[in-house]
Length: 207
Image 1 (tube, one colour):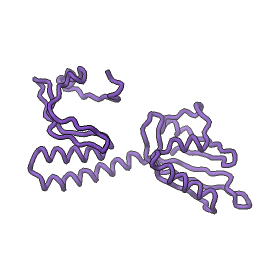
Image 2 (cartoon, rainbow, N blue to C red):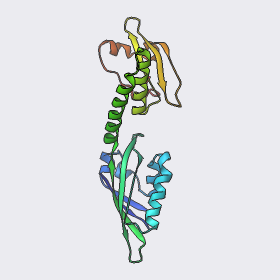
Image 3 (cartoon, helix red, strand yellow):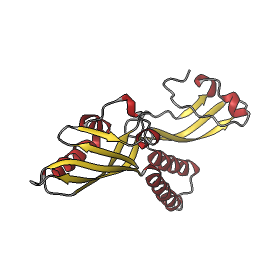
Image 4 (cartoon, one colour):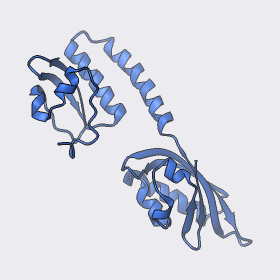
């Protein structure tokens, strides 16, 4: 867990070293306040999380918890369960909250993978066309990995081409079916021919 201690009146938080080891943020690089934390919450989760957080502080609750996506230092998002205990003064006003942020990413991904395997088995049972089967597999892979595009392709190592019959797209993707030439995308075909695994961390930056 990344442990945090929030001074509500002073709007300052202290974090444990796990903020660096789990999420990549160096503790000497910033002064943490509520705005810093809010900025790291996924935009689609931010309003919901902040509403529940403010309601806990302004009400009479002794505890607060929420699940949301937290942006890590590398730009990716972790699924977290964040929860805190409120410390109030004699009048009931919240002065401090001490909490812990648990990284649920691997647990949630494992759950998604198991569900995808079950769904794949059920959907393939009704199909006999290899192209339709490949598209279903690509769709489930794309949804599970949360990517823009996924596809199944036939590789011709002699001609150095890849044939994509049909790819799966998210709502923002652009389809690229048909025959593509590996060398149009760089020289990694030579690595593939040697049986090596190829991973491109960022296609926008890789030459």
